[in-house]
Length: 385
Image 1 (cartoon, rainbow, N blue to C red):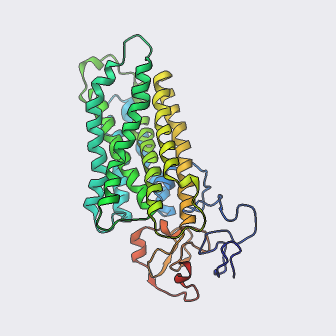
Image 2: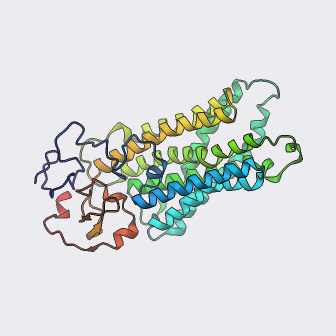
């Protein structure tokens, strides 16, 4: 049958295998916002952290990762409530980065250069996060006067200057990979993953450095061990700040990698996936909670500031990934037929699953290597070029 959106011949099904549009007529069929390209059972606007930051996981592993993350966070809150400061603080800072390292390995993001990619993302982000925290610790304290509200200088430095520097440093590792790798990747999801990894590494090192007094159990904290306060502080450290850093850096890197993708776009590139837009949005997303927590802070309010901004930036990131996957639709080159990890249908080397509409670019490389010899000759991958 012929797709009414792109004009190509596509097998019978719910979605065009070339452009990803819904074959049934209806408003929004081309952009199909009700079916996120990396996880078609979710709406594009659903603020789901697992399918956003782990787009290569299949449905089963997405549920497993979400359950594991929730369980670990509950455990960390319990450790904080039990006043086990060193353990809860270090684990809170490392939990999401460690899960992401496992994800790196499982889906083979690194292709044939695992050491170079890990050094250029997690390690570079971590080292720069530690250096930044150590160098700015005393200057930040000097801006605070006990018993007085923060002044203008504090807001300008901590609320504006530090976020600008932080975002710049988090891009160092991914950009080094982009320009220096012998076999550069131009896949937008790879770029997003590199950016997320760098942001998580930076957040982990920064959290540990900034919480060093808590980790070492300094005597001056003996009278400041409110169990609820200690439990609540693990939520920003373990989830909100790391995922915010991951989202802002991932958004910028996704835009950079998308622009380098040689695949001809199906239509003019959206503002949503432009590099200037992603940079502006990322910086604003870091500035708002930095200023907000300084002006109107506290354990619950800090969670609120970071939580609301994180939800907003995740939705923007999902929109950008969804738009990029559709606009830059192309065969991924597995050269055979594989089982769609979302719905289980047999899918040839085409951009989208005809049954559920999942973008085949979000299939992990381990699965691509298991593709069987081509068994659907009526679909010619060359037609997508």
